Amino acid sequence: MPLAAGEVLVVLPTYNERASLASVVAGIRAHEPGARILIVDDDSPDGTGAAADELAAADAHVAVHHRSGKLGLGSAYVHGFGTAERGGYRFVVSMDSDGSHRPEDLPALLAAARSGAGLVIGTRWIPGGRIVNWPLIRRWISRGGTGFARAVLGSQLHDLTSGFRVIELAWLRRIDLDALDSQGYGFQVETAWRLEQLGCPIAEVPITFVERADGRSKMTLGIVLEAFGNVVRWGWRARRGRGTAR
Image (cartoon, rainbow, N blue to C red; front, side):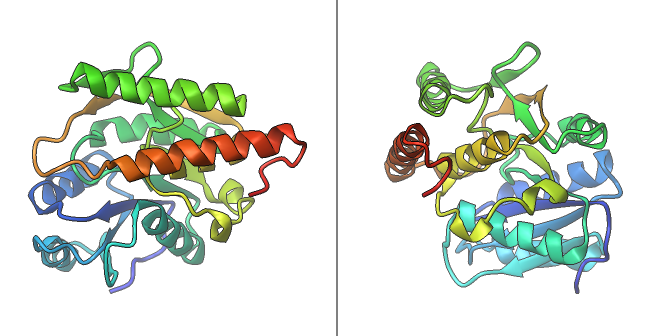
């Protein structure tokens, strides 16, 4: 069943998130009752797709799009962004489905968007932001990755790799989504940096990031290396006067 039009579409990419998905959806419905939720499942072998179908059957605010394989986080968000555009939504939310992004933080992000920010980033590395249950090495990787991207790209943003965001569709239309080929951290860095270069008004709202209690992280060495290589390439091109050209 297609989603009815609304103001806010929350996009939840899933791959093996059966254990956490229902609680995340329930939290979104409790804290932002008017939002519609789109679950984009990449043919999860643990039955996440079937669990998502059950949630959609019980709630008209929830829909599921099934994809034929593990096509990646970035392409899942692009799919969701396209759905938001076609559905006439004003805002699209990107959010993890593993419980690391707390639904109770969503109203503050949406308040900033409704106040005029074209991009709102749920930020861990500003006063008021914090991380729960992350080992020190994960903190170093995250902060180091953001610091490296900021330096190479000349960005002023404090948490370029955060995936908890609200984007106004009027600004998202200015990005060529078909030209975005990054996944994971790289996708988050790329979209934020391109909007920053376009002069998009950006707000960073402190959030509490909670390490997932169930399942396994999707972060791989390949995703980290992809992000590193892309950041270097984008920074090099920008310094040669070619802006955000690929």
